Image (cartoon, rainbow, N blue to C red; front, side, top):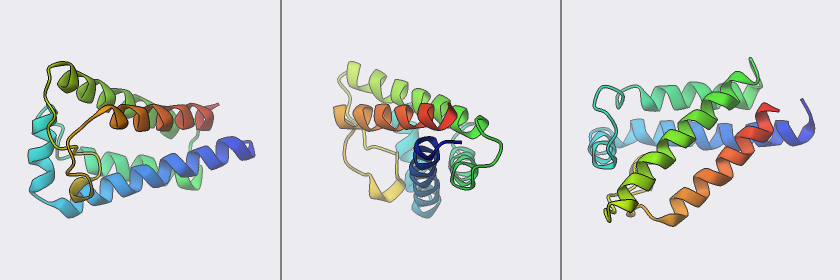
Length: 125
């Protein structure tokens, strides 16, 4: 793993650990926000834990490139959910970082996810 891919993995990993941890800390408010974004109900309880595991694996560089590819897939899914809401003219609260991200979704969320997806690609290859 090159220095660039290693740094990219750590950045994405930290973002995922923060996202997962803040969702767990938000308790009941995060699932409501996630439903507002259109997340399937059956997936919602697992998302924070999946983010924590992917983030930790990225930070410690275990079983690469799988965690980086998993992060990329999640980022694409999250971006599609956000894009659908924006296209429908809806701006629910961002559920990205639990209580830290109560602002309505916008283009900035798509740009942030695109930047993290680019870093996940760097981490994978």
